[in-house]
Length: 341
Image (cartoon, rainbow, N blue to C red):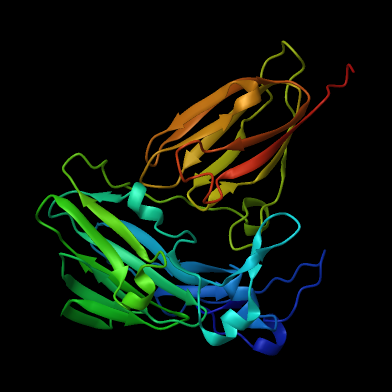
């Protein structure tokens, strides 16, 4: 994994990790801003183009309170021939020619058209944008608005004022601050319009009815158990109660975000299962298991605890809000028979 926020020797810490192996390294975050991390195993182009990347925020000190969003821009190069699972795989020739099938924010074409990002009039907005590429520059622009300040790579010492559009190179980032006084819809796009129609468009909805901005942000734990800064999720294994018994000690803990559920695989034993779900997004989600008649609603930035009864079997859980499951909000619940069976 290559971590752009770190200063560390490539020949020691940015090395391939074989299946089943673990590599750890420490580093000092010397510079604030928004940075990319990605798979650095050759061919790097193929790995990034297939989604092996993420964003790291090194929070500067002394920022004014604001409603904050993080957006990751990237490209996909889907070929036209499905594989055995019916999925389109990345086309190497399209990658090498810089000819994407989709240019997106947060991994999905037009993700924030149906579910706009909401804010209130005249509220200070802070948008961290990281461009994962792997090839195209993102000319970030909000239609109907101007940026009060733009900070290259998100560093507060690199401030520009009163900008309309700002180019973010592949592997770079920027922090945008703005206030929008009037209610309405404000699309955000890449102003490279050959690519905007490939999915690189979303909407900011300015409304006094927007939920309040969160006062704090989630604190993630150990990356090897929380699924953060890792390519994939670690299954959570917990003990449920026997049929008719009280819930297990401590709930199953799940984080819900438009990028998916963490963890994506859960094992419990049959009986009453207590679950805690934290919605990390500033818009609604739900947690649905059809066969077990489970439907738990999650408001923006809300954490809930619920209990449901689980019988042995394997079940899909997902967010049933249109477009969310397609964006990757689904997982698997395995319910094991109790010791009495």
